[in-house]
Image (cartoon, rainbow, N blue to C red; front, side, top):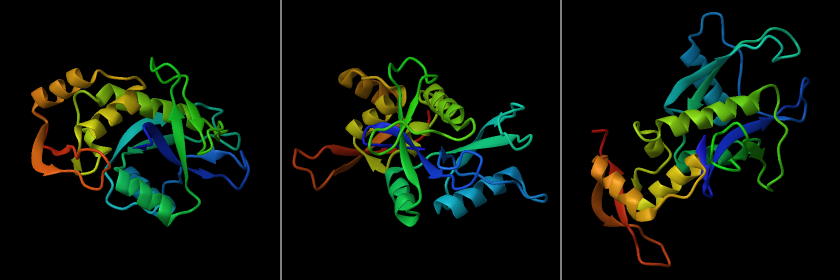
Length: 214
């Protein structure tokens, strides 16, 4: 998952086989008999999304009896957060990847998310993958204020506007600009770099870096 054009997004693939042929789905695969779960997750990231050296964490285990019409399947979902450059590199490396937007109508919980294609049309997702995405977004919201997840979605050097954009995208709501900036600075998590952004048509903003959790 990442943030693109001011909204949370996820990388999906179109299924070409039954069940749910033609539906969008999260990249996945079966775990080898002698393979650790994290190794399987990293293999899928590499083979299906071209992603290497991406930090990922276990999200949740989905085990409803009828979630897969073929047979009993238990899925261990993993969450990998992508900075903008990694997200664009994955899309460029694999043209079959679909960058889907996660739209939240009211910002009051992620149960009502809509997964949209680049044209804004709602996507049909295979299995319970919409539920998995909803839980991933809920997890991000819950961790935004006390972990570094927001910074995992940013480049190494970022503006305060970019930082606020990420928080607003994940929360699904607009934040007060002065209050947000004061809170981020008061936390001691960020430090100015002494440089400014380049290539802008407006006054260049100061760049910050993530200093660590205090």
